[in-house]
Image (cartoon, rainbow, N blue to C red):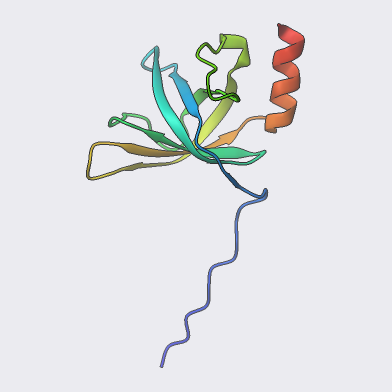
Length: 116
């Protein structure tokens, strides 16, 4: 009989299940793409994008998360630079995008407030 051991947790930060509107900016395609968060942590996020993407792991994107449910406008200086860690297409033409923030999210929020 083979013993199966669980894989060790690789995440450095606790995740919070959170569904908020999100937009990403893909500099390669020079376009904004809407979506929704699935979960977030200080170091990254899992995003659900309702369309197929040509983004791949290692690509740099910019992420804007609406912190309030009705926040409709996110300014470019409020977006956080992130690296794509995983990009999985689903059977229903959506994409699950895991990103790691270039700086911790709380530091990025502080930087955005200073830039405003």
